Amino acid sequence: MLLIYGFHTFRSTGTILVGNLVIIFQFLGRFMGTFYNFAWQYETVVRQNTEFMSARYIFEDFENLVSKKEYPNLEDWKNISIERLNFKYNKNKRIILKDVSFHLKR
Image 1 (spheres, one colour):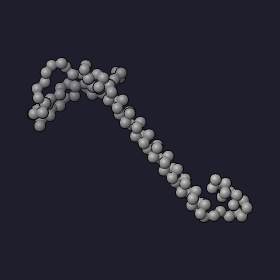
Image 2 (cartoon, one colour):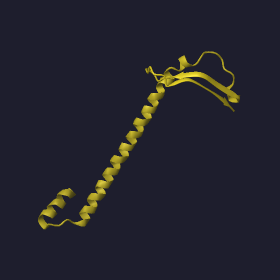
Image 3 (spheres, one colour):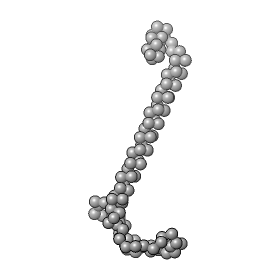
Image 4 (cartoon, one colour):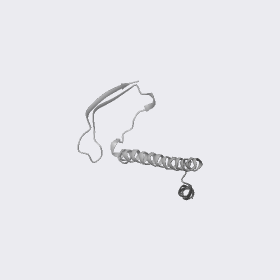
């Protein structure tokens, strides 16, 4: 509505009122701010969904990854050793980590 009024005023008088420009810029600023906030929140939801979907394969294969034997209390551990670890992503033939070994001391 304001744009129509401003256009009509410009055609009839040949001038543009500063107040009209300020109101238009304020409106556009608020509109773009709302659009920016929506886009930011949408991007956050998409990123979190992607992170969750990446971890989903770990949860689905957990039973296959963990052996069924009993483990000691893990709260008072002193040393942890991982030897000859291989890792690849689901449905990927290329091994990302091959024969990785490390030792952790508390």
